[in-house]
Length: 325
Ligand SMILES: [Zn+2]
Image 1 (cartoon, protein in one colour):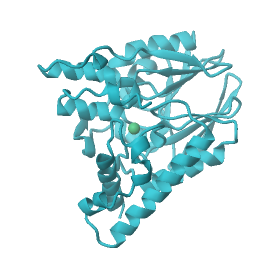
Image 2 (image 1 turned 90 degrees about the vertical axis):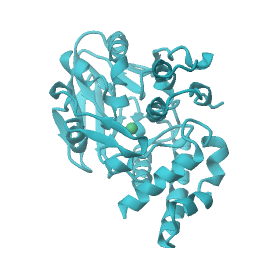
Image 3 (image 1 turned 30 degrees about the horizontal axis):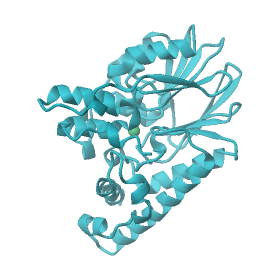
């Protein structure tokens, strides 16, 4: 089943569709309703109701929160709650209430896996609730200045200062946090989905949050205007696998929980498509010729029918390869 298909109404305005595209599963229908307000056309029943905010225990002190944008993980405990990502701005109140249920009491830390608004939309709210924001150097830089996501034709103005990360990790650096009986290792990978992505590994619980370095079940968005490219996605997926054993549970930025076996399949896809695009580029082919070469053909049936159709994915990945040089 591909749940994304029914979540994207055909009547969305282009702008709303682009925003929906950026969000993945959780907020797609939620913003679908916002889109319906921008257009006089009726929306199908599937898009009429926002997806519910849902929580699911990952065992011990860990909870997965979905339905507000990117997937969120919450670690509870006496040292204060730790949250990884915080959804879209419009869902910040609901997100904060759900986080408070999962981790009652003070918040200590909020980790941003990267700067995109569907992962950092609750920054200001959670910072004001006491969380110190930790992120990649480039995530802070982008949150503190106006941004454009070129492929989605989407402007993202600078966030208010309260939403900026206070502690940052250098490119390709690593840092560890120790609270609530957990050791949480943050690994900054080379530019991949953006130029400021972190892997977040809860070593005790053996849960790995990959942010948008992994879209599970459909083609990933690669934000080349933020420095991302598919060659970096390959490196990042390898870095993630190096942190895994057979029992690691993987939280993708969008889509359902995954296994290391799922991640291996995703890495094989990234490697193959990256190689093909590099060869097409070396042969002097154009973007249209790259699309015509069907570089994703083995995966189109499985992953190309969601909110990011095959051709859009290939064009996006191609532009990242071209921009990377
Ligand atoms: Zn993203």
